[in-house]
Length: 475
Image 1: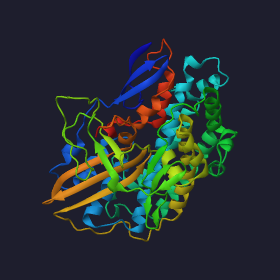
Image 2: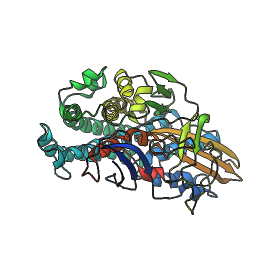
Image 3: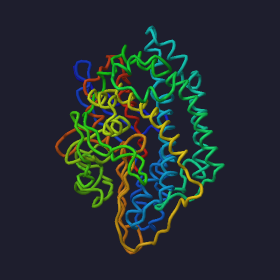
Image 4: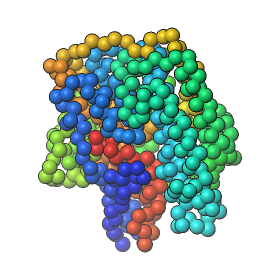
């Protein structure tokens, strides 16, 4: 028997995602992901002064606005031939790292794990603990994690003035130079938040978790909510659910004066090849857009108001050298060569994506400590830059959900073109001209669907493991 299901919304912050499922014999045989809300930031930016990108693009998203700000600053700096001073790049990395860390905490505690507190899982050996820890608004894990997140965002307020939508990150650094007292406050805040995260999430220090080398070591991790997740994963076989293309992209996270903290590249079958940004192309064949496939630097955003042809989403279909790639924390850590992430990348499942984010939480805690200690209040945090009438640039960063790119062209002193490829654009892309499904569409194939299910729980686990941010997708 074949039936069609339209499932959505999925997100617990903003829910503009619909997925059409074709179900045959109790399993998904095909999926089509639709981003139904068009916003048009790329069109808004045309004709504006280049500096307006620093104000407007962070407002694409209230969750990952520092990521957008950082990408815009790098793109503008590239066009101007200007670069961040070393201490400015370090402060920007702290701002960005705090946002990504908070995003991971929010996703795990508020978006992903509450699904396991549902009555559908009553009777499972772990269900009572999941209810106790993660029931929406009442779970024992929620308050400490939310409070730790709030503490961490005090650092963004201190360095960036506010969150979201800070204007502190500029092409040549950051606008506020922290003094010695600020550095102590940042370090104190990091220590306080780390204690909560380690107690709740890991039940131990972050360093041993970051040092895990194998899947077996992850599975035997004894403490915190990470252990509860492992138990749930083993029972529900999340290690076999939602397997994606197992081809991963990262542009490298946190550019510093010494280079990016994590490696750039494309991981596939255990090998890492170089990432060539020139090989990125956006396919429009199944998007409600007019035009031909193009690299973002030559691309355009022209909505097809008639929504004609085979299109079914406002999301374009980015491809790298003609192929799909998955992006996110798992991709970053695998490309960087972390042994546990490499093993999880080969698995490519729901369990692998969550494991990759937990691993990155542990590593970020140590990186942030190191970056805060390296702040030099006596140094300059922002350099000088000269405006240009004509130029082009690109800014690539790693948002919590994966690789984010901004491509900018300036003509006669104003923005002539601005194109953005967001992480969820990569992961939730529609089919391309060859009919190849995007990563989440492919990962949903084979998901079990019960006869009475209108919103299948397995489908929700797969979708939420990718952590969609649809407002970024339809920027």
